[in-house]
Image 1: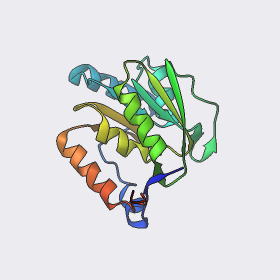
Image 2: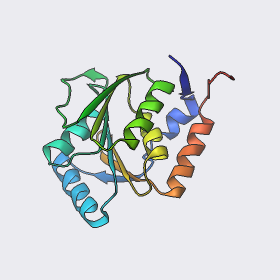
Image 3: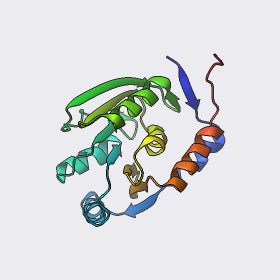
Image 4: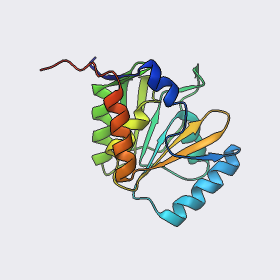
Length: 177
């Protein structure tokens, strides 16, 4: 398993802060605000990262084109989220890393014309960065902010450049070929 990126201690602290717009509130409140936002902005693509946010979207009849989950919530195993997906891809992605396998699966899913669920064996949190970087412009990437609400990242050229900078700062352990 090839690791493309590893989290540094400095970035671990930085990435605790939302990289997009934080919508504070209960599940019901955040889903209503997100639904209103999607109706107003009509993103070309919606990507959810995380089991709880993916489950809440599904329960509110919002079905992302790509959902990335790890069957864990707050570091505890949970029942797999029942998501409407035409294709499921399983990848290995240890905590604090982004593997080549996960990176490739996200790129493949974003090119697909069907709903895709990626299940990470390990941890999915950092895959938010890859989703933002490779998603179509103006797509929404939504993930949970524990005990606060959800974060919506609009994939603008500026946001993609910010994410590329974060990835560049991650300890890149890719072997030279």
